[in-house]
Length: 491
Ligand code: NAI
Ligand code: CS2
Image 1 (cartoon, rainbow, N blue to C red):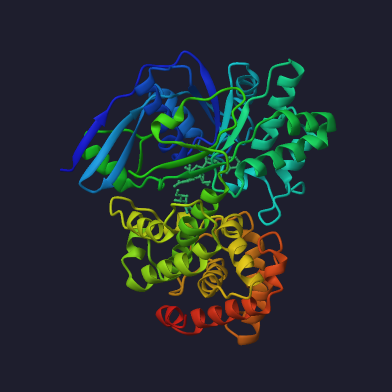
Image 2: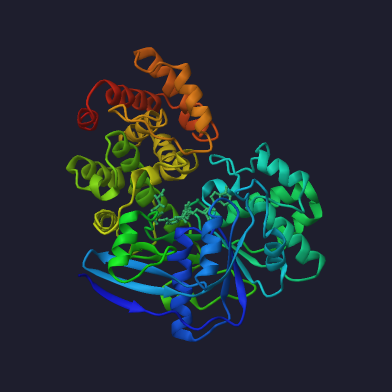
């Protein structure tokens, strides 16, 4: 039996001062844990959370309510040591998406009332990269998306996260209530600035004065978030049951946790720093480091590993050739693009990431990481690669990664096993694969060119770089014509 430290939840709050959009696994295991620890230590019960889902997971919203808003987080240092926390800071859950009958916005009015209430001082988000409806390469609002078109047409019945924020802020402005602070906790570059862009651009369609008020008055601090929280598997639930925890809302994660937050909260905030949150003036260097080093190598492992039929991060990291590739990518292609404050040792950081990936208590599926590549790759690989290309430096690991991603989007691994490609651009990918029979040499070139020409994913300056295009094409041909190991060795 592992060594388990159990910690019960603190007493309930006196006020729900935080509203959250995106009640997923990460919110339950990261932000909620920091708040729970803060409440335990300080006794300050003023920062309860109302957490809402706008898409899927109506079950979780109702199950948490039924469980009295208590659930468990199992933090695994390794398979022998874990901390089991009971969490009670999420004290209201709402659903504002499409329900099983196809109807929209069951609790939308309750959520808007909560967001517009003077009690709400911070709104946090983990709605995934695609939930901001931004063009991943340019950061502009995707005003041609059908959900955004709906929100422009019916701004008082919003369906998207930016739409809810605009309507709630409009209500606050009307009622002369100061705006809440908006804190994105998603893996996006400049996540605060990008969230502001989405909200202000959407507000412009409704009322330019409102848009200007939001731009001038609302704080959108940036943050870097880090904790590996895989989607739960049956094995995870079974392991918890063996410890006497029968909890359908539980989450399993690593013991490591990091949160770096730009300190700009005009309506106040919990004293998170006492729990180890780094409150800084500029998050950008930490955010870029994490996106390019951790997330960049995650994606590299995800596409290459998934093509080779490898299921999880830990299985992949045990393959020497993949482990070597990730270390090389981090040290030779990601680290040289980073400009870090003094004292940050990027070699030590890379090694600590490899050690975290090797945590054998987590079953982090590569297919989960491979999801939404179109939304992730610009910040993980392509912005750094563009910088390198600008100074004539090649990025062979990213070129191989891009080749693997393109091949991955065909929906079939190198052994011919099929899977679903989960990405907002999946239909476009399927059309490109249909158009080009990539087993022929010239069509492989055309296929790679067509993927690189997607300017909402690949920065056009990088797509025009012949050396990069040639490297991706060569890697693609090696992947499909030779063995997986030979493609790696060709590096
Ligand atoms: P999850 O699958 O458990 O939850 C996803 C959440 O996003 C759900 O609440 C879902 O309703 C919502 N969502 C998805 N698409 C949406 C849309 N178009 N509009 C509004 N809401 C939408 O995933 P998890 O683990 O909670 O991760 C969510 C995000 O948190 C990630 O995309 C990432 O940006 C961030 N994150 C996750 C980490 C992890 O290890 N799981 C670590 C660091 C950051
Ligand atoms: C992963 C991240 O799913 C993914 O794309 O790369 O969720 C990763 O686990 C976290 O960012 C770790 O903090």
